[in-house]
Amino acid sequence: MARSHSELDHSNRLNRRLGAMAIAMAAWVLAGTATAAETDAKKWDQAIVTGIAKMLAESVVGVEDALRNDPGNMMPTGNRRARYAVKQDLRRLRREAKHLAKELESDLGMEETLNVFLKLQEIAHYAALNGRRAMLTQTTLDHVATAREHLTKLAPYYGETWTPLMNTP
Image (cartoon, rainbow, N blue to C red; front, side, top):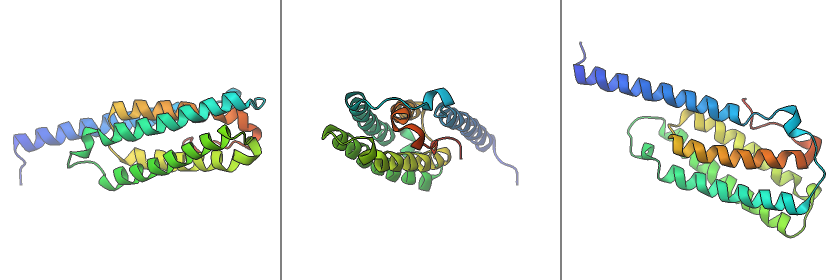
């Protein structure tokens, strides 16, 4: 059965959008790939690490807000399950990021907060996997890049214990 011109036009637009989103998601993953120089251990500085952790917590809230306002929520296309999974991952990221900031504010150091940091990385890894399947706008991806930048800035303070879970799986 032949498809009408409007069905083909819709299909072509959808394919172009999916292609653009795939490129954007690839850029998202690559933007988070840290080089060896970026992960070289830094001397622990409680004030700096606490400040970065606070910025991380704020930026994760920004990602949640952007995703909530993302027009993809209204679209019948895309992988809705992946979008819901990303939302769940972001809720977990927000909780852990706020917990890390609170722990650091109460003067807990690297050893006491290491597991929280590693959990943040793990959740971010799963959010990246789910994000590849979800149709996210550039605005949302920009917020993701900011949050990823803050998480990557924390890594050198956790020294050799940092594992690049956020990199391409």
